[in-house]
Image 1 (cartoon, rainbow, N blue to C red):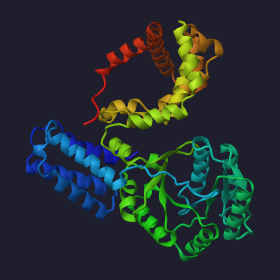
Image 2 (cartoon, rainbow, N blue to C red):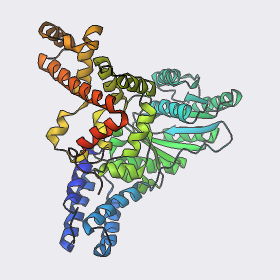
Image 3 (cartoon, rainbow, N blue to C red):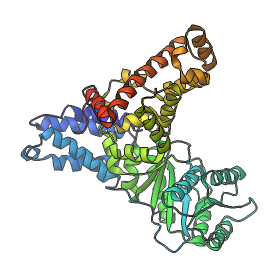
Image 4 (cartoon, one colour):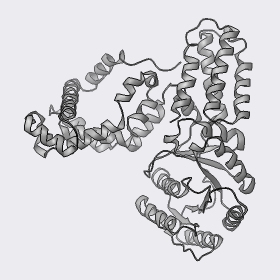
Length: 454
């Protein structure tokens, strides 16, 4: 996420860290690099100009700050200004209204409205303990109605049926009546999109808006469209009075222009970001955390939240008890750990959130990727239950069979077995010493990680 912007901004501010004094030329050069980085990220020009102007004004007199070097202070200025541009803090979905609270989702075709509706339903059901109904007003795409019905079944939401012969505003009104009748807390209304903003689409979505008077009106937009996302959001805001924005496909957005432009251009907060197709891949947008990720400072808070939400705690406890009793860490356990890592968004997501990881050399980063994780799982899946439990029995002919079954080479099988052996040794030490043993292991590893923070 935002790889290009992160790399450019990190380069621009890295040379300032630790400097006891900044010259005017230092500041001028840094601001020039930051400006280029933002423009290349497709951030709207007015936003870039305001951003640079604010930092230039606040950079005056940095030498007078006590206990913090001017270089560190300027880096913090850039961080704080990124936060300010994106909205200071997370603005949660407002559900403080007479139920059913209506949430309308609008946007262009292909922006991910239907998928986002399903993701939002799951978040409200699991995190807010709400009874949720969803309805599709997209009468132009029968597949969209079917897709939403499937998603509703997967996440446990009520589904109100609709047909292509119905009028969108009537569908929404009937869904609201059904949600009221069945005691639903929230009604999510998915609307039709178009390839571009046009009068017919706006008129239709206005009719739906009038029919159900939504408490929240969210504009769903593909973040990879850059500053065009902000411009389209502004057009929708003029027609609908938006209450917030959802940025989708943010995992594929290497630039970051949409995230840095939407709030300033529209005045509306980014409430959620979507990253991936899975129904749990929707996160609240926290500007301060995103700013830290962009500057390579990590995001430990989000990492902890991810672990609490996505890691199977029962499996984790069973593994801890197993290791604590001195039993070996086998390949079944190793596979489980790899799958848990995938649930957390994969290695790319983890490295974004661990402080200092962005400063690792590209050569090293390329060796730690999600393709290798999937390959290791495939190799373990090609083993017999006995081989997974007793990996020491895996020799020549077994290795050839496993490599053939997983579509890999024997060298890949050897690498996996070596990694597992290292993990098994570490787990054994941790098992002997419990938490103290684990802390000693982490302490020993600490020097191998680059420092994070400012």
